[in-house]
Length: 456
Image 1: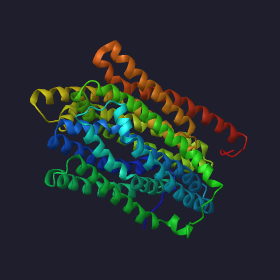
Image 2: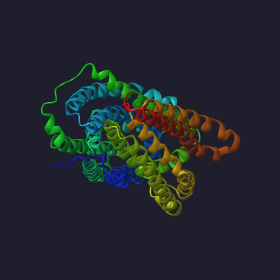
Image 3: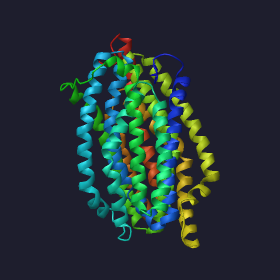
Image 4: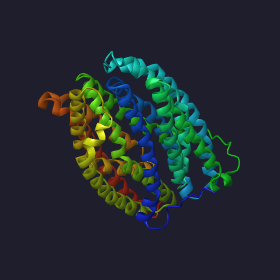
């Protein structure tokens, strides 16, 4: 039996760490197979193949993060209902969310294939790697419905306090993906398409594990039949989810502009930035996990009307986030050169130049990692409160800072200016998120002082 976790009672530190730790391990597995993908592609197929996969990274993130945004947006209301112990409304939320996920998946799938080649041309993908990028992304985008299924099921489990099943799902997907990477790319010689197919099959396995586990949770069994699509509830759920998805679109547009600029510096820069980008997930792994933990923690306590516990939990999250970021920073500064080198092959002089680009970029991002961790903590806390608008505004701040930096700084400081766009984008988002969170909590405190419900 899969157990849910009520986060409205108990010490926040223990709750957040016990919830986040399985997610961290699960994300490590996910990043492991992403890194193995890149290592196999880079070492076996060469720098052009690695550059092709990396060139489509932001477009890939644009599509898949839209899916993730919808699924996570729907799960916020599930966490509120669960925290309020409102089984009847939770039944409607769950059933309505399932139907909305189907429509959203179809819409995103159509968008992905309609924009694939135009966007790759728009960002001036080099002609030598264009066909490889199209092949890789076409296979990945075919799996949009699978990704939607996994994200919805995993988000539902997390909203009920279960972070262990997503760990199991990611572990199984990782082992499957790595094995199939080696088989499809090295043995069958399927090229970048083989790496994409391996990812697709791994994602399918993770979705199936979450599906079976969710069916066996106490909360789903208590619901009984959940075919209660509520037309009145659907707009409310979309109101939560749309800013979530649009926030990710805005961030992705900034990333595509960065990729457009990087493409102008040639394959070595594309490959070098790709090597570091593949480590990006490892750098922010704990931040994402703390963020999921806080979304669930804040969402359940908000539903239960426990405003004081929300602040206590968020401040605890800030403390452990900064400590974790500092530890990762030190590790990357010491071992980062060896790690990025594992992605890179080719002629000695090319490999050395690419490694230097990758390591320099990694050092800058690692040094300012606490800024990224604050971003995830406060953004997720606001989302747990049901506020998906200000996180969307923070995405706009990221877009402005990322775009302005990548277009302006290289003109002022040469190639060195390329490396700072990401860090400045984090800082811009932090300004919006921190101020929004404390204004929102001040308002909630006044409502509680007047004996009014936080949701009013």
